[in-house]
Image (cartoon, rainbow, N blue to C red; front, side):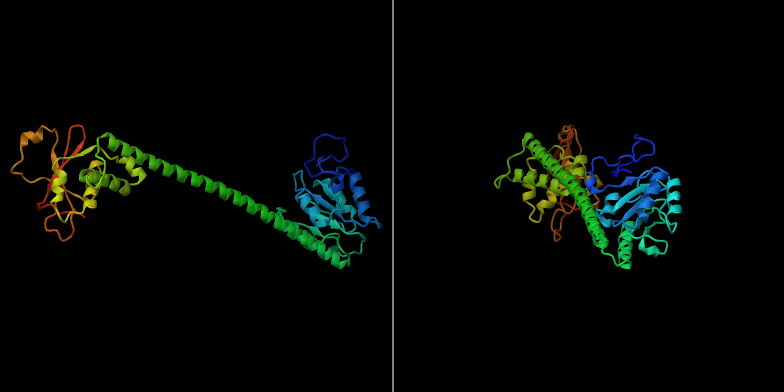
Length: 366
């Protein structure tokens, strides 16, 4: 028989002879042998019964209807040592033939494996030549552990020193496997973190871009530069800030800050209210400008009471109806809740016209 690698058997080759399974592996590494005939089985049995044999004989099998060893050959080689002879049989007539020929008639089959130590006899203890069988058919790490400990016990029974410590070799394999799994998990987590960071950076970039465009839009509308000496510009900046801070990016997309102007008397009218909370006023103006005030329970729409100096024709010429939002714009000790007065012009622009300081029957919201 010829030494072979651990790749699946190829379709070519001479009938009755084993095929190369790992052609790239050098023969010095003692790869395994594929058994394909009863003559090859007879050679294995002769090898097992050879009284001058000093190395281990290992026979691996495939699960029913499969073509590859159930155990990883490289892992088995690590546990049994480099000088062991490893054979592989397909489950079927060859495994049945092997079981009939060995002394205790306990040959491996259907994925199981068996190791014969030197000095096989009909009177030997079954544990001297361990067999690994997994009733679940998985033949994974648990089967390799069973092989390692059973082989150690067999050497102890025979008072023989193993070529390699099978238990230590198995622990080394387990450590390598855990390390590899940890590296794979680490790589996956790093990829997930990279994707999350990219999504976060894109969201931040989009939010900053939206804010930049909004500020440019404000400037394009002729908004005054903000400064301490510019109360109108300062209020417009505060309105923009309240809109940005109050609404999320998605909400701002649904409720963009629409065009608005501050009437000539609006800033002057709020300066006369000593109890006015300017942040609250800016918030209300922002919600009116982005068409979101109607959905807020904290604001209460109030009709304007009759104004003795109002000129109906002048109001109508603006093509819009004047409205007011009466709400909590002042401190709680205020006796007169003011109202924000505004007009909606024909082009949709909101014009804030002034402040009211009257009480109506409509309750103020919070």
